[in-house]
Image (cartoon, rainbow, N blue to C red; front, side):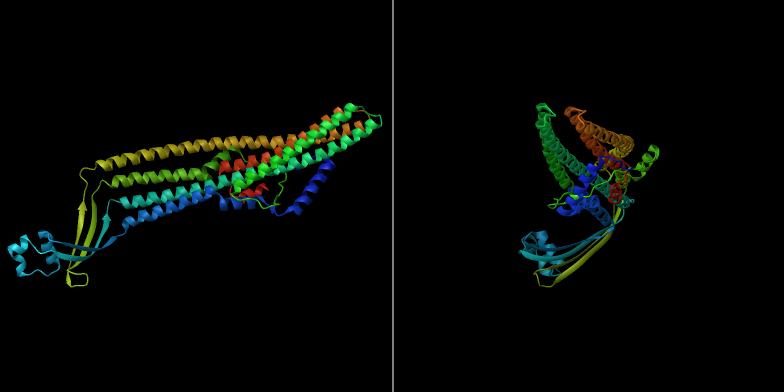
Length: 452
């Protein structure tokens, strides 16, 4: 929006003084820099990033279902159990004729056995259950990545809101400082007129009350500025350096498309809706994997073992290999698992539908608020120009002795309020457009630069 004549020459001078003071105070923090700092240090983005890493690890874990499993065991034992002694000496290949003696079989001498064993298994076929698990894990990873993007946009929106609030607080201080200076001048003028017999004491008292009120407003504005900067620091997740100033954002008009197009765009681009879609697909894959678990499973297995009577001694070795087909003929637990996955799938479908409805409502609300904010800026601009012109007229009438100090103070109040209302409308319009971008899923860090 074209910036109009908002406050006359005195406001231009005041803003120019602000710019000079800002350049002398310290570094300037732009909105994009604030957003980047928030994305780098925000706890919300750290949590979302951890969720993405965990989901990716889940994909790798699911893929291990196709990999063979290999175990190594080093076993050391000693005993006189007849079966244990008989089997150990047989595996050690140290069995002799004397070991068949009845006394040796019934009451054997204790022996030790050192066994080195490698065993492995490999799932060959499980009715595509592993593929469905991998597919579900990939959808879950996609859902986590989309949700991470949504969290980032939420962080950007918080920074934009806090940044705008801090700028508005600084603008209010500028207005309050000028109003205090004006009130001080008016008080001195009233005192001079009272001494000259051109005004009564009540005029001077009214000017003193006005000056005191302007002092209080300035102190309140400074307190609000400190709170706003603390809120911005919390949104960024880091403190502002001493003397840091914010880059002003000029008043502008932000284009908005047709409501129907905005809703259609949001349904395609909103990261959280994509996350719900991916979660729904993951649950469908989970149901298929649970159904596949009812079928027979084919796996291969193998075992190699070396047995010795001492750790470094000689001994024998043996191996066994085979293929196994297994079928759970009483799958009560698997039926419960399938029921659980079916319920989770229905929940995911319902959540997706609910998400679509909420997004439609959010876009409609943000669209309406943005349109209202645009109109408020235009109205506030016209009101500010009118209040400035009215103050000029009353000031001239007061100097000519044709207006009372009460009329002048009222004109001053109206002009001050119109200034604050205008800047509130300007920054509110920026936030409203940012909220519309967030509602449509387009408030990326790059897009946030268009707000400044």
